[in-house]
Structure formats: C-alpha cells, structure tokens
Image 1 (cartoon, rainbow, N blue to C red):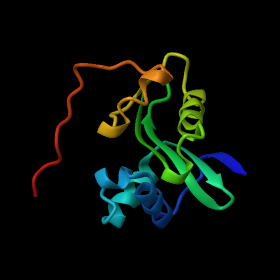
Image 2: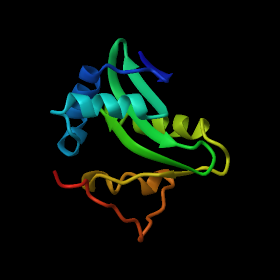
Image 3: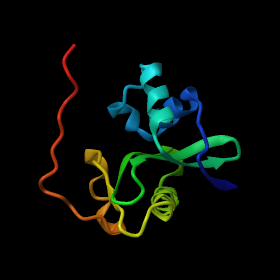
Length: 134
C-alpha cells in the first residue's frame, strides 16, 4: 500500500538508496553524505511516497511558496515507475504552493519527454552556473 507524506524526513541512507534506485543518483553527489544531508535539511518542501516503510519516491523542492518553486529532485524507484507516483508527487507539491507560484525544474535528459504530458512548458533561456572549482 502506497502512502504519501508531507515533510517526511528521509535518512541520508534512505535518500541515497532511493536516488540510486531511480537512476537520479547518476547526477547527484551520492558519495558525499554531508551534501546529501544538507540537501535534505535545507529543502523547504519535501514530499515522499512510501511502500510500507520503504521510500519509493521523493519530490524535494526549494521555494518561497508564492512566486517560484524549484523542484530540484523528483525521483521514483525504477521498480515503481509507471504507476503515477511522479505525477502524484508533483500534484501534491503544487497543492502546497500559492496559486501564482510557478514550478520550475531541470530535467534529466532521459526524462525530458515525461514533463510535457504533465503540462510543463519548455523554457529556452534557462541558464546554470557550475560549482566553483576547488
């Protein structure tokens, strides 16, 4: 039985394992426990999906709740994909936001075709600045 939770704090180990099981771990610093801990502690909107006590989906966002919300991680366990978990996590994220709040995300290349059917629009002028060099 799947259950969705608002504000459910995942452990760093659960978060890392879920990222790995979703393939998002290929693009996240899963070897850096301190970074993963910071990602969890400083997100101000976290929704999860559990199958029993096993996390199978997460939507992790940074937002002001009124103007914009950056959905920085949307991860669903590969074994659970195709069941509407990602769509439900996005819908529940939007329910927490003000009516004028825009949801923003950067898609993984393999997932780029997923978002248009959920109503997302491509934005041609997004820019990123890479991390500072050490």
